[in-house]
Length: 560
Image (cartoon, rainbow, N blue to C red; front, top):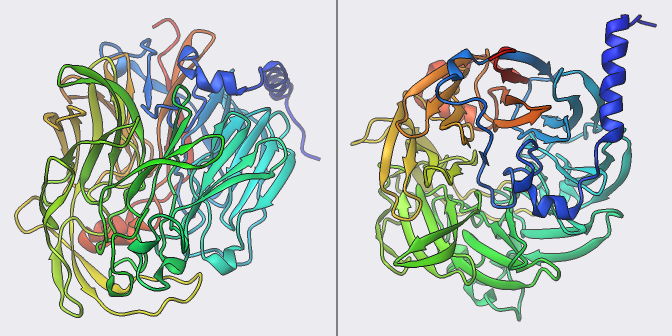
């Protein structure tokens, strides 16, 4: 048996002691997460999904002094590291590809426990990556690559319950994003937008795993919206719920953004608006009943998911404070709606190369759509990779701006008929990545007015950026690039103030937290996912960028 040094024993005992005295994460704590700036309790930081921290010990004047505090390797690099770390009372929880979960001392980086989900014999088309866990009721919740939902004891990592959402071999879907705990339930979506599959959003009893409700994102015969699907196309129409949503406790509404219809590109067999694909949906948290929806892209034939984050902000618009929701989508636009009723407010561009629509009018209608012609190659911008990827933006109440990446890349798309095979990939076309004809290819991170979309500043990059943003009260915006640089920008000007090479590209989401009054900044480093091949088509050198799966944590030197 391997020996352990006395110092290591003491450190481990301290870690377990901290875990033993950590308070349970209750639904009340989750609803009031803003009162705990030292923690990071949900995927988006709070239910509002701002990815903002009021901590300011690390700020624009001293960020250049930021140094590594510790690093933690997950042991596998296949798939990279995509997670958002969660921190509760000095304990950090992370996931890696292949459904590994770790509880870590947030000060020292010492492992407290780990849980390795058994690797399935077959991995679905959507891959082994994972974007994080949810906390609540003394448990840690994770969705799996074979479409299960698992609950672990937060103190020991012991599996408490496991439920199969749907047979992964039959549906061709899985769970890659973090669940969302609301009241005594855990909410999870599934992938399946590129498969012959019918999507849904599920709620389970957090303590037992019993299903509480399911909302089908494609209406069945006799249900409102079914008429927007031709024939039996609704049975295999996609409509995935693959990115974590948000919750408004005051309105008791769960907000989720729904992805594209299938087949992705060939729409002749599913003529119609294809509800509720590419829609924002608001559900009653207790029953899962639909309260309102706003469809951003009816009859999508470009694979422009609207599946990304739902950012909840209360802002003045035309002299009145409105409860708003921001939702960036793959079509290269950000939708702004009233979150009480779904009323359209505005849509503004994240990408400059958009050519699939001439404009979006004051009611949210798509004017001058550019439709693919079956069997005829056509240039469409952005590519199916999106004018932005799933990695999330950040909203700062201090500046009043929304920080988000945008991507300038296009595709030559050729659509073709395809018969659905249940649970199998279902694209209905082929594409080749190409650079935009009139805009410089690459990426950028910009600060936007959240309602008008007016650009306040822009930070350009040679390659697309695939990391989330983190905004702080220290007047900083943190993010990373695919070459392995973790950077801090001035939130007011976009000036690069600090950077650190982590050795592998950034695909996940950084956070900040504090323990005993000391602020830390944590970032996953690990380039690798399905998007690697798409980037490599336009920038061949990116295929050779180092893979990895390491969490880096930074802090100011003691005494600073």
